Length: 164
Image 1: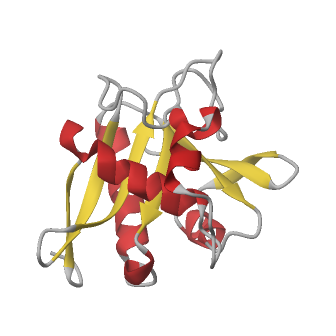
Image 2: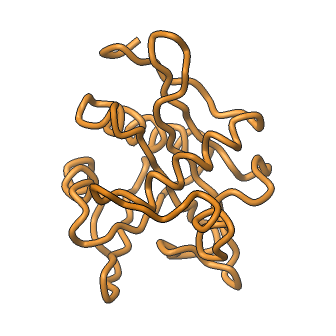
Image 3: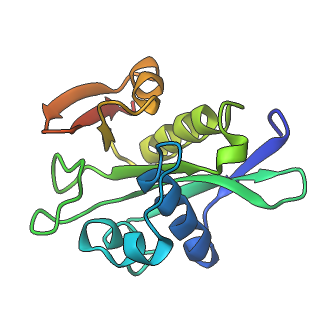
């Protein structure tokens, strides 16, 4: 147990909560208002959850003292013909992370990030990627945890970290 929360492996039954965290990630700005159904049905976001949990999928869920989920980090290995925002290669898993707003700035995101990097390494992945909008404060966390920019887009960058 960390500061009021614990981490556990994500299960197939966590799909709905991962959807909630995908919506949080898409609406990271204060006052973000993209409705859940809009985020989850958009092709660019749907690929991060459709058919969860495939053999190549893995993740962690942070739970509060009452075991209610408060954040999640998971990865998917996406094909070259259906890449995600942070795609760098067919064998490199792409990370998605979301934390409930009430649990932000309490170490949940950093713990999830460190845990998912470690998990990816134990599952044989030498690198892990993500995409982050340039003005997202989480970018500083990713840099502090060893992620480096490998691709720049109009508003978002692709970052990669070696896991070993």
